[in-house]
Image (cartoon, rainbow, N blue to C red; front, side):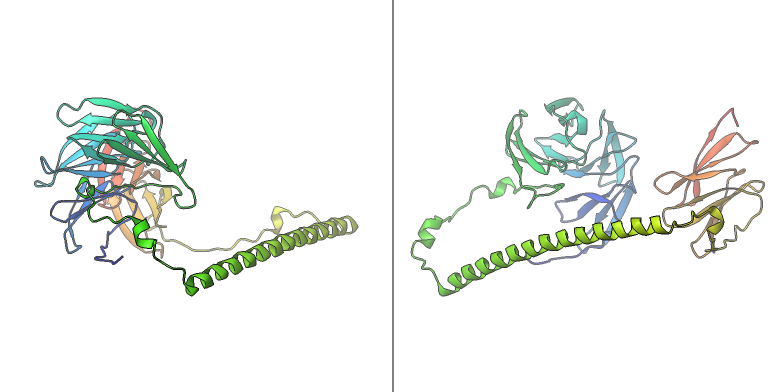
Length: 363
């Protein structure tokens, strides 16, 4: 195998990938809720923010679109992206979490978690069930001819179904296939293999070599050595267990001979780790971001202040009034207003903007 190209994917939590006909690559960034397109040189061409999670992705050549599943998201839907305009064409609401997805005969087949495996018609968006049994989350799908292949990460299996949903076989070998996720199969273009030679015709005149015999002897010696190591390890564990029992017995006896005085809270020693300048007074609320930065609210001035790990101020955002603050998800924080404004604000830390303000009639 040879590495043809390395691409800096500029992110993490990447769950889906597909290749476009012109060689460009598209990746999904689940927690960022983004789709990024990279050109043939490995440089990012553009990215799009979508309204729900971004799990798996498939390309549809008929109308040059991408379809993105939402995974385990607060919004259960498929997002259809127009590649030429670089805009969301539409979203298709679903009734379950949705993970791996493939295109077959102008219909989308996707893993629907507790709904099994489902198919959706691209023209009228009608749904039909293929497999009704419950699947694990993060299941991926591939198709070949009239078969569907589905991964089950909890059972460590790959199962083959026909398009009628009848199980054909299940492969399970945890030594070589543990926690399977992504899956793909060879295309229909390679199903006619030519110039194949029967292996019996190849090896019938092959003679055993001295090197092969040496390898056999070496493997036998290795097996014998491993067995000795295993036996020694078991004996050592038994010896350690006995030593542990002896030590515990001595400790218990020592405690009986000389009781250890009980400790109290007065024995605790406190140490100041860091002092942080909040850059404001009348601070009411505080929370910590996943990257270690601290967020403070200045109530009277109505500011939210973000402080770096080294104590320097990163930035501040004006909200009107700011009482308490909490980190939500996806670089969002929620800020309550306290007594006067009766609302709370949702702030995007990445863009440093107030995304939404919700008004209430209670304090």
